[in-house]
Length: 273
Image (cartoon, rainbow, N blue to C red):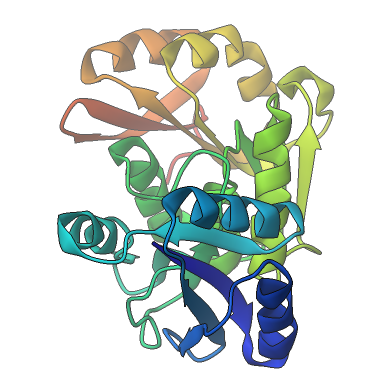
């Protein structure tokens, strides 16, 4: 196994020292991007590699244990390949060894939380953000998971994001990912119910599934500012019309489908261009 630790040029020596304290020496440096550095250290025992990575994560570092060869490594490399969304945005795991120096609008994600941009329900919303964010928007990310949607909105030019979730692990993952991308000043992670948020937003995104959308429909409508737009995802094509009914008086202005998953966009009635 190989322990992969995410760092920068300035912190290489410190991270090497921490690995040495854990009994791991001889790490090699990979440079997948202009600012990103990865330390790759071979560890003979899989259990030891997992424990080292877990200890490093507990200490605030982004670290994983990956296979060192064969079909498992091939699968790992496919899974960690960066994803591009047109010419404005791309997402990848921070420990990805693929070159990303030329990727546009890069967002890196560490361990924890849900949502890497790979699932169709997430991709559909990211594509909408890429098409619709013009700059300066205040965004509410409901059920933030890893924070990927809010971070993408910021990279595209949004001014501020409030990211809520009822899972403390998701909120902490979002906080770490904001710091990883240098966006902590512009993203507020909140362990809160939607009803606890008392302001309106230019953009609201909720990739939370049909049942959660229906349950929170009144709050979703209330959190949308005049002229703003709401994107809901995690629903099947057959559920779109039902969800639209619960979101009245908002007006559906777009609907996209990828396989078994759909996403719909709503605005206050009469405000669609």
